Amino acid sequence: MVFKNYYKILGLETSRVNIDEIKIAYRQAAKKYHPDLNVGDKLAEERIKDINEAYRTLSVPASKRKYDRIWNSKFGKRPVVTGTGTIINMFLGDVEKLNKNGKTKKQIAKKGENIETEITIKLEEAFYGRSKQISLRDANGREKTITIAIPKGIRNGEKIRLIGQGKQGENGGKNGDLLIKINIEDNQRFKLKGCDIYTDLLLTPWEAALGTRVLVNSIDDETKVYIPQGIQSGERIRIPNKGYQTGKDTRGDLIAEVKVVVPKNLTEEEKQIYTKLNEISNFNPRA
Image (cartoon, rainbow, N blue to C red; front, side, top):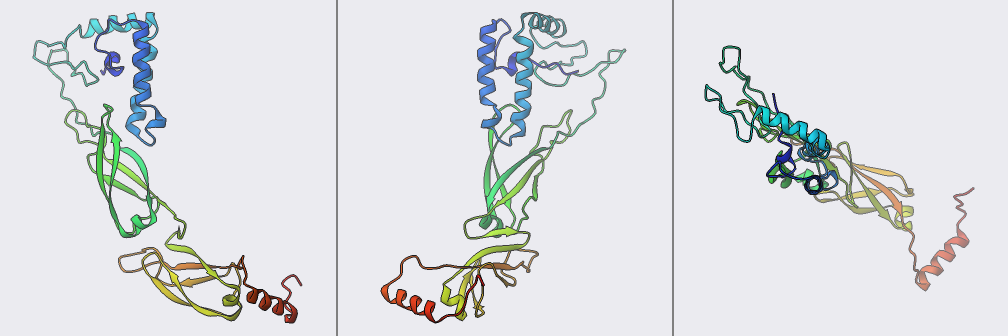
C-alpha cells in the first residue's frame, strides 16, 4: 500500500504541531503550487491535490489523531526494517509487500504517467524551426528548465514528445513522457489557416481603379503581383507556394486580401482632381 506523509507534503518537519502551524504551512504550500501561478503545469495540479488532502486530514483534531495513530502503528517514528532487511519507505513511496511465508513479493515494474502541457510560439518560430526553453515543476515542486527543438514547419496543435521527461516510474519502470502541444500565434501581418497564410494588400483608389503591379511581402521574401483594373476591397489574390510548409519542398499559398485605402489628408491639387472626378464620373456604387 502507499501511505502518504501529510506532514512532509505541507513542509512540516514534525507531527508535533498545532492547528495554527498547520494552517500557516498549508497557506504557504497552496500559494506555491496555486494553479494561477503554474498555468498548464500538470505536476503542480497533482501537488495541490495532495496539499488539499493533507490539510483536510490534519486540520481537524480528531482526524489528525487518527492519522497519527495509524502512522505510528505502521511505521513508528523511523522507517521500519523487517526481518528480511526490507525497508518500508515512509515518504510517499511504495511499500514492499510480504507474503504469508515472510518473503518479499516481486514488484512489477510500472511505467510513469505521461505529462501533458502546451506552449504558444510565434508564427516565424514555427515556420523556420527554433530551439526554445520552457520551465516546468516536477512532482516535488522543483522548477526545471527544458530545451525543446521545434521542427521547421510544425503544425498548429501538433504535439512534441520528450521521452522520459514525465512522471517517475515505479519499481524500476521507465519514466513517462512529456507531451507538449504547440499553439502557433498569428501576428499583425500574417494569419495561418491550415497551410495557407493570409495577409492584407493595401491599395490606393487609383491603383485599384487603374490596375498596377505591387510588391507583396510573404513570411520569408517578397514577390511582385499584378493587380487587375477595377479590383475591389475584399477580393483576394492567391500567390502559389508562398504560404506555410506542407512538405519538405512544398508550401501552401499566400492569400492577399485587397483593402482600398483612401487618403485622410489631401493636398489642394488632390482635392481639385477628386472634385473634377466627382463632376465628370457617372459611377455610383449605390445605384
